[in-house]
Image (cartoon, rainbow, N blue to C red; front, side, top):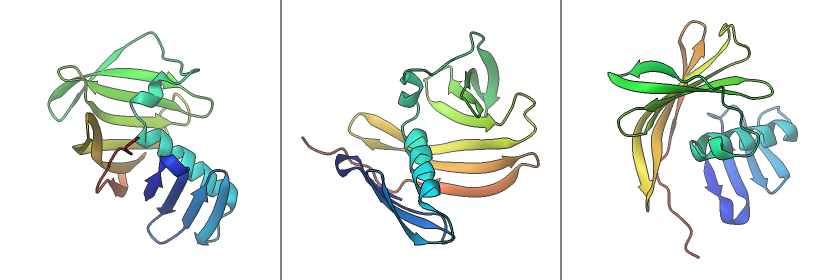
Length: 158
């Protein structure tokens, strides 16, 4: 994926199966048998993921009042639950350093179908720290779906 927010541009390749080039609301299909609507959905989804945890401050984000607990790789975490229109998300935040360790989402509260995304490493762009790798697993079955790897990030100079 290539992303340049300053010109509202994104190019994304989904492992050779489908790829898009998007500028503003205009989507060009570079490969695959999907439509422009899917390309825009993919863009919005990835902008949300790369914008975490700041996206949790967006207007309309509804946290449930309870804070859960978990442990990720030996690190005690608080678990925040956010209900969106189509999904329920759980964000695992390291109690010691505030780092997001993992997030998961489900289509409903039964947790019968969804995905878990684990985070590894980080890249710094000035004072911003961004997870370097996102590993995707399908629920049920813990089936490995793939890994997103951020190779570089830089802030535009204004």
